[in-house]
Image (tube, each protein chain N blue to C red):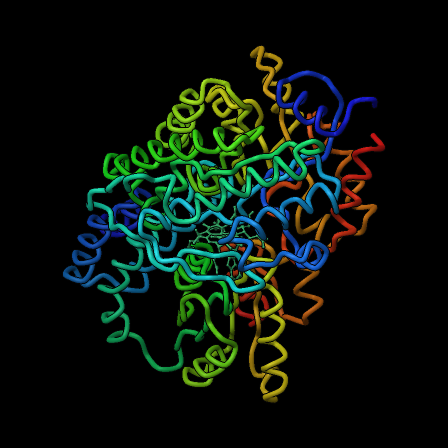
Length: 338
Length: 214
Ligand code: B12
Ligand SMILES: [Zn+2]
């Protein structure tokens, strides 16, 4: 292929046909990767050194064309006052208590990017740039405003309000947009090559296309616009998305990362008809192919994604931490053979 | 009476809790058969459930409709107890999300649909230990234990539950149903669960099938 993996990833994110490569848009740390890198959860969630060391294994051990931090989606909510339940060695941190009840006025924490685990994430980005920046794209990952709002008031409350009293949740989404822009700016300043916006709750598994258009897309768009194309932005949304693929593209995302629940050929066709060039990234199933399948199942999923029109290969979503390393390596190898 | 039944069903289809409460009170005041009233509510929820599968309605609608259903049920249940004779006792089910897992939404949906289908559902909530499932199952003399797991890291705990029942020598006393995002029919077979529910409607069907009712 000529080009290095890193060049291919950056090329694909710019919409150029530089060749395909394998990345993992969402978290890819596994127990075996922890053994190999000597960096473990829970420390890797909180401290820059182990955080970077474990992430670097994505490039040095697995051979991914991009590395990323952090591993969970609770960084922003913690700074807003959510109580975090540590996941110990085996799980990722999760939210134990939401900081707000709908009706409370959300308060934007001052000096957001110097709080909580953000300094560790930013330092990890600097270390990754130094240690593996020559061979892999370094990505910082933030949570989309709609999903941060879900973490602030609880997903059930948010979803119910999204239908009957959408105005009541707008202040949380607005606040989360504000802090997402600050966080993304800091990620760029730390030297990241690309930004991932994980908006896992903005899925059609959770909300209607109408709600996506009203309460998720405009805020994703605002974050992306504020960054002014300085680095490519990948929007990742979980689950079903067929009816909103054009809307996601319209946020200005440089690439869209989807799960295998999405009909990629149909989306590509719609994009072509609308003159939309946004690359689509996907879609190797983390359970059926990576966790429970054989290396051959993984290779088949890679080939199918490429045939479907994916510009880069990635697991659908977060990799399960008990996934065998050989499965992830099989994903990289199958991609290199395309 | 047809009018009240229509109102009950309509309230669910409109996922309107206030309207559901009002219609339930009206049903009680008019002396409507509570079985029929609950049936009307269930019809509404089932219609919504089918529309959900076709992606015509979405999760928030289902959640609000479930709230409306539960609110109306609370009004109607005392009536049901007054009129119901022994022998028609609803089949007790214990449901919960397995230890280590706090995903609640899908399990709640299954619990609601089992309730609409006439089961006596005892919901233990989320993060439920195997021993707690058994404790409750014994207490209410459950026929079914239904267990959700949404993550690859908590799915193995479903197997722990089955092993636990086995170890206590009570495995055969219960029908164990498993479900949730990461659960597949293969997994259910592997851990020797009695049934797998792909979604809420399928779970009701498999529960009835395994009990040989309907
Ligand atoms: C909402 C959600 C959350 C919410 C849950 C809120 C709540 N109170 O329930 C919150 C934000 C708290 C959350 C937290 C986490 N989550 Co989460 N979450 C989801 C999400 C987006 C949707 C789940 C959902 O509600 N779906 C809608 C319902 C209707 O579907 P369902 O649950 O599948 O239920 C249906 C069927 O499965 C079946 N069913 C369900 N239960 C049962 C039970 C029985 C007995 C039967 C027969 C059938 C059955 O019927 C239902 C109706 O059709 C999924 C992704 C997804 N799209 O599924 C991730 C997902 C499940 N979460 C995931 C993860 C990793 C986490 C966290 C670790 C992340 C974090 N660091 O915060 C924590 C874990 C916390 C913990 N210890 O459990 C991963 C799991 C990955 C894996 N395969 O292991 C998923 C798949 C996302 C992903 N792709 O990475 N999550
Ligand atoms: Zn996802």
